[in-house]
Image 1 (cartoon, rainbow, N blue to C red):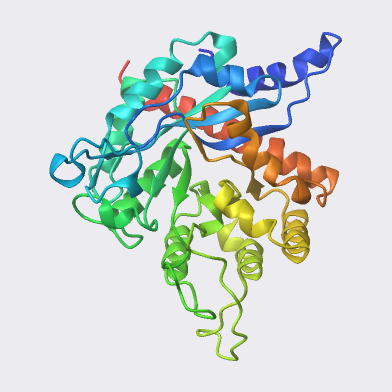
Image 2: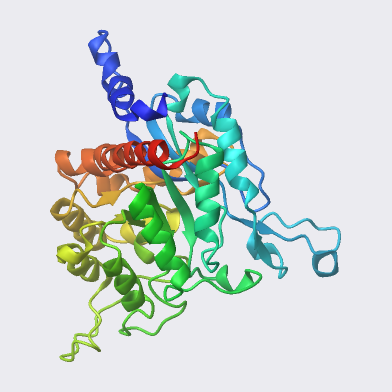
Length: 364
């Protein structure tokens, strides 16, 4: 019942303090947060609420869909805590969704308003992925607002996943986005825009496939995580070719072209992750150009931390603080949209649609 009236409660929670005579001004909502890590360990929701305090309003809540194998023949007694610490494979860990739902359902109704749980424990290379998502909704009605973050192409990760590698051209991806459009689930997709260590001036390898997929599903609400960037998937640079099919605009110009295209009105970008922030704040010129893009398309970007099981407030807020030079360049309207309102608009709409779909389609 509490989730069924998410929109009203969210507004009441966010503005209610002012109505009672004191101000509660959150700095941001977090569109990208992992409660657990690659060995499915993390912090509790009580600890997370303590970290959020009065600075963070709401958080998109998910674990990590992949579990790192501890292969004794590979690392012996050393237990790897991260995927870069061993050559052993990763495998999909579907229990993450049940874990998130179970601990979320232990919260009070008021505490629940601070989190938007996401389904992420499915294999996007599997045609049965939709069955998993449907089963999670049926088992935990009233809980989830979206799917993700899930990965299609990711530097150093995709090649380690056991089984078939996810692909933007796999019909499983079409079935997933068809289902999210039907249910209203918002999707957070990690897909590198390019291959690692790409040569300067080359058109991003995965760009066309990603845009073709998105164009086929105009009713699916999608957040493209990190604007397609990564540790070694750097912002593309321009080669200024006269041939359109060879021309590669600079990364921010490319994002502007996508955002200006009405075929992709359902697409949003998040600027989560310190690896993305480092590109933005690397120079006054990059800060200025990024601010201009966000000011122009201020309803299409969301801020997220991409924190993984943070152990302290300092660790959690580090990404937000890295972006201080960018926040200073945004108009008041843009800053409010990127940090607060875009999140509320997308997740409130998703929650309302999913609750309506559940009421009409799930077994009583």
